[in-house]
Length: 572
Image (cartoon, rainbow, N blue to C red; front, side):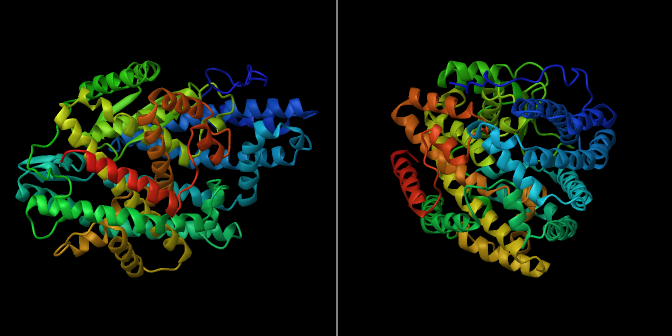
């Protein structure tokens, strides 16, 4: 059941319905009013928190709308200019006034009188934000955001000529599933070659980012940017040492299973060694799965999956059919990747992706719908901060949906094809754990070696890729392998956001195990936990979903064994 919040006051008439959250002339005076408001009691402080939340939501939605438009049309100069204007003009002012409000709240004598169970997570986050805030970092963070936008523009502009047609890189994905090995190799090489054309620009951007981030940490009087990032991301419930235990568990348990799967693949394909273009193709030479053609088929099939899984989830998904809530198909000028973004004032989610007709697009659709469910199930939460669950748990919401959808893939595929898709997805789960460990370990090294050179960075990347990557030959593709990390958006735009996928994947596997034993109980736990948003500490959110919050070697061994057993039961 959703959390009961009716005992707390609500924000009434403080923020006008027609406010433009992108204009300081609209929101600045209201923030100043909050800063100057007289607080005479605990109730006054509670009301300030609620009024501030509604104002933050208005600004957050304005930013979301500008970001969405910019990523939908990276080649639209007006969309780019509008987003940059917000980043340059609004972000610094919002960060400055937010710090002043945070400081006033945590230093308020009535803060200690607030209900600790209700407000404890919020207050500990504000404490951390106040502790690391430095005014001199505001322009640096603006510069960092602008560099991230440049990275997106470069990626969005990448196209290749293939078989006489111009293709975006996401549109090249289907060729990796073609049975003709020569076609796969040509497709891989043309994409990899295109990426290498911008390798120097990518390195320049990243060098600037690392320098900015190191300065941000120095300004906050912290040892390194990793320390700053852990505090900024409110990682109160685990440490760098915990992440290193995850790396170790993946190396000991998931990597050997990935290598065993690849050995079977190599034998089935009858090749001496696997090459980078051999990992997505069907080992038995069957035609690639083509689950849908066009966005409408993807939407309709996904709706049917959720209605069969649980009618209430189906109804939630169907609310996204109306209005501007979905942008699914790949096109030139569209930023890479996929995301779900909540428009916080209206409390309406938006899903962005680059569908190309692949089975992984169905997985992405179901994944992002899980994020949207999380948003919608917690939308009655008055505090916008609590409508942003910690990413480690937000990804449980999405990854669980991918696994729980397995019995319903016949909405897109025949039963034989659905079996193939389930096997591929579970194999992908193991690959995901290995890739997460690679990226996370890379980030730990990058920022605990703040003065590394490009060559040192590349050498360490290759060491990690050899430790956690698939056992295949990169002969003749050494430069492409060295710069493989350039394709990982998170390293550029959201540093230190990646271990969350590993933590959440382990949580999702546990949810999948519960679902297989008792589907109704699993859905009940899912809905109850997601309705909490981010109002409880991570271990309690996991507990509410019936999950163990642990991502060390013992837990990884148990869950990898479960995946291995399920794979053994599935036909090739």
